[in-house]
Structure formats: C-alpha cells, structure tokens
Image (cartoon, rainbow, N blue to C red; front, side, top):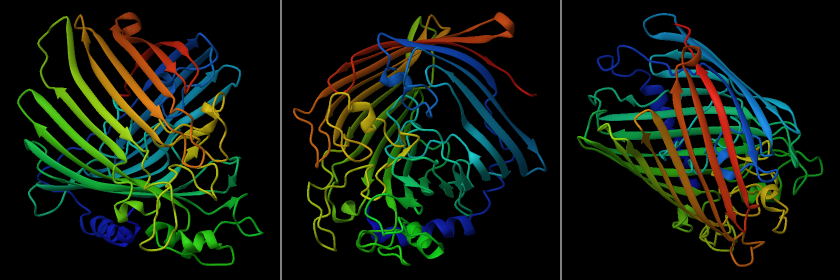
Length: 489
C-alpha cells in the first residue's frame, strides 16, 4: 500500500469520527437494527470425505471441511430501545458440528451499544467489509466472510452517515477496532489484531448516480513467533509499537525489534483501496467496483497495479411474475499474479515486488483464523492443496491466481428462490514455489430454497456443488437443511 499515505488516512478517519458524531437529524428519525433469530439443522455429504468449495467457502467458518457431517445452529439477537436515540443489544449464534471432529462454534457473540447510526460492540460479529458484493460474489479481497469473525472491540458507524451541512450529498461509513487471534496457532502465539476502514459516498440515498471510495486496513502484530525474531521469541509489542502498527510507519521500539521490523513495518499489514460507481434506473440497480490490493508498499510505487478484484453487479427492482426469473447477477475478475514482480529489495525507490499475499516471514501462519483464509477463499491454506502440490513453509502455497466468477439468483415457479455460483481459476502457486503448469480449477454450486407452512412456516433448502480440476480433489457434494425463523416481538 501506499503506506506513506497512512498518516493522512488516519487523520481523515479521526476527524470523521470526532467531527461527524451525529447524522442529519432531519433524515433519520427511526433506527432499524438487523436481527437474526432462527434455528437450523443441515446435513452435508460428498462422493469422498471433502466438502466442495462453494458449500464451505465464505460461510464464516461454520461449515465443516470433512463430510459426512451434520450441523445444528441457533441464532438469537435482539435490541432494546433506551431512548429515542440509544439502543442496546446482544447477539449469540451457536453452531454444533457433528463429524469426525465434533465441535461447537460461536460465529456471533457480542454486546452492542448504539447511538443513532453509531455503534460500539465487543465480541464476535459477522461483518462484510469493502465495496464488493458479499452475496453472489467471491467476497472482498481482504475480508470475505470465509473465517470465523475475530473477537474485537469496535467503534464506528452502522451504514453510511450523512456529513452535516451537506444535505445528504456526502456520507461516510467508518470504524476502528482492535482484537486478538486464537490460541494455539502453528507459528505464533498471543497475536494481536488491529483493523479500521473508511468509506465515503457522494450522492444521496435516492440519487441516480452515487460514487464511492475508501480503504480498509488490517494488521497482525505483537505476540511471539518462531521465525526471524529475537532470541526471546517476542515480536514488537507495547503502546509505541501499537502506534507504529496503526499508522503503518517503518521501524519499531524496544529490544525485540529485529532487522526485519526496522526495515519493514511492525506487524503484517494488508488491505485494499476501493472505488465504486452505482447507477439507479427505474428497473435496475448497477454497481461497478474495483479493489486495489496492498501489502508492503508496492502500490505506492504503482507496482502490482494490475492486481485486484473487479466486479459488476446488476439487480432488477421489479418482478413480472414469470415462472423463471433472474433477479440479480454478479460478474467478477480476480487477479493476484503480478505482486509487483518477483523481486523485493526494500528501501525507497527500490523494487518492492514479491508481495506474497497473505504470507509473512515472521507471522508464518499468515492471514488466517483457525486455519481458514480471512480474505478471498481463492487464496487457500496450504493444507487444502498439499494433497497434490508441494507444501510451502508458509500459510498459503497459492497466492498467484486468476479467477473468473459468475453469480446469479432468481425465482422459479414464483415461490422457489434459486442461486448459482460458477468459478474458474488459473493457479500459479507463489513466486518462491511456483506450481508447474498453472493448474486449472472449476468450482460451482446451485442451490434453492422455498417456504413451507409446516409448524407455522419454515424454509427448506438444499444445494449441489462440484469441484473439477487439478487444484482440489474432484468432488461432488450436497447440503440439505431446514430453518425456522422467529421474532421476539
């Protein structure tokens, strides 16, 4: 990333939070809080012991990788009004997995305090970060929803908030958070997490044309690592090094600062710079977006500029009652093969390539949480590809990819909702351990759900998915489930 502009971005973020602490009172009189209250049971199977890619990817780490398996899920979330502007809420979602590795997961466990369109929460909370599509697409590059949410404390907006005196023409969406990673990581312990984002919008909510831009910034820092660190095994920690991590400045403080830290930055930094255009017509909403990737400063020197996620989403606003309708479509192209070239020399003006996305030479377990990629699932853990391709002494052995992706959804016979995701990838490994022949991979899914009147109303759903190619095992699999939604009102 243009790490040199981090102080400017930090300044803008701080000014936004301090100066725009209230939205336009004339525009917001009631505040709606999204809740998820349901119980669900599901079963998974395949022609081998592996779950197909699009059944388990981008499910917040709650779908098992090994089948046959079953799951039982309960979600409870509720908010209470404290006054005309203040609300308090709690949420918990528990998932029980039954297979060879029985476990209970908590993808959501949070306490939240809200003031108008601002919120402070502590715990785990499902979030989608970035301007990319989060339903039919591949997910945002840096934060796709592929792993369990990381526990953190976060303060920021819940949606876009109008800047005062702009009459709603300029809005922003921002947050600032800190948390920690899991215990028992393969290479690190006590690893800390810092994250923030700032997005601006030009155009009112009902404008026919809206322009978006912003960034997200993630840092892994502190704790201990087994690789390239001082004799103590400690990575730079403490308040002064936290400030370095937040602002992305070069160097560090203390006895645990190594040559690696002093010539790079404290911690493992990554994220994306996002831009988007949204066009509204009478019958259609069109959203065009681009995410530029940054990790070690290449983007500041216009290296790796071709890498990123490009997407187009089209939504129909009207239904014509046909027996078969396509209501939404997403087309995406993800490219991460450039990485600024295969050379990294460091220093201003020198080559800063070989970005080695999601890997880090001190934090060898990389951009992961419980061995799941936090970012795009098309940069997978080595554990998912080492059955055929040589293992690489880092988190992922395949971060140089090219992906074409199509996502569609619609209705069938008016009361059945269907969706499909079709992805084709070309995989080149890493610059340090290249795959021979760039194995090709196709992964697809088709699913449907419908409402039935049994037991006061339930949703029955199912999906079939396939993996064909040379990256993953050839797999055909399915999911069948039933869900009951309810309300506390």
